[in-house]
Length: 247
Image 1 (tube, rainbow, N blue to C red):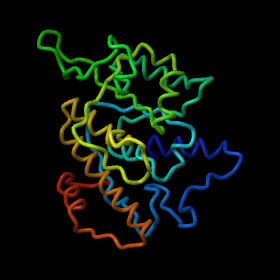
Image 2: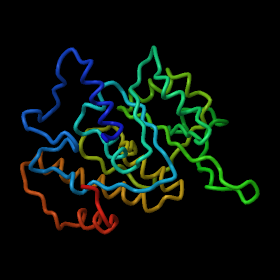
Image 3: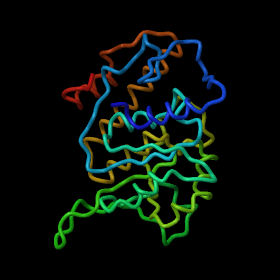
């Protein structure tokens, strides 16, 4: 079955009045990993069992961009949902997911832009010593440029009741596929890896991080027209973390 971002991409293309022209569109790309067929990384795509889920709320054309890293999250984390964002309407399925009693949603956004009462920096543990299992964490990520994400945050009142998880990454972003004015603005896959780490899912966080590095490696190799070194450090790291990759 196609993953969540792939389904959203198909729906977005179905209602497009004109084709989306991405940079490098003259090269034929694999429909699953969005990299040229010669640099396809689908044989390395991992899946990891996680207690946490991810809810991607994506700006209009994000699912269409080959450089989008929300795809990577949907590849790795089985419980990933993806919804398109619009200022005037909201998908009922998104509201239903946020209200589902199995989930504890966390809206991931910088705490400096939010009133202090809403900000949290930790995720609830899997269970309480007295009451037993707690709700599963659901990380709500605004997948967009920084300017778009701030607009989405301000103009989505259905998110106003959620606690805001403010990350404090110890490292600068390694994302090389788009320009950013600030090095501390992480891409969506990097944010997801940090969230999984906070949820105590260290192995899943490491896989997400390694898969992101492999994707970047393949994407840039295709852009520069150079061959893939399948035995370099990034590939060996991912293979070492995933016993049986999904093919």
